[in-house]
Image 1 (cartoon, rainbow, N blue to C red):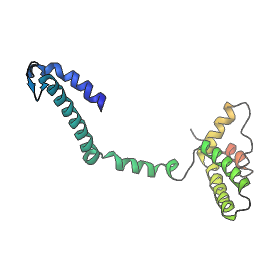
Image 2: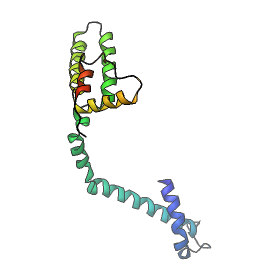
Image 3: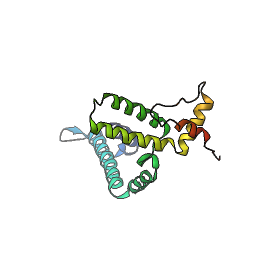
Image 4: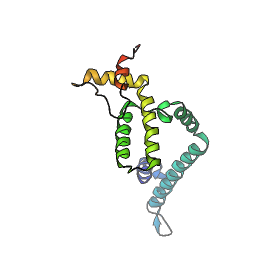
Length: 160
């Protein structure tokens, strides 16, 4: 706000400076300073008022962003392939550190099911095909996926 006020005040000042006589004072302060201060306060109030009106009355995009997020499978229930790999590895670490805690192991089992589902989706097959073609080594059998998940993804026919 300081930059807004100073920049706009100094840009506006040349156009209105003739209204403030520099040799006159009010309350012991030169009229030039009263003019600069009034422009700065006007800019401050204007910017805050525009922001308030926009946030409270014109922010029609908020509901649309909620709808977009709810309709985006990767914002609600699906995972992008890179996240499947990361969550699979973290789930394995959590399982190894669970020390027999049944609740943690049940959660890990559920995450394994979710990852298996994610690896059966078309986006996984597309990503795996890219990784297989771009990297020197093909995608190995990932330890956190079902044993046949990588081969099934290779067998998926993609219509582009």
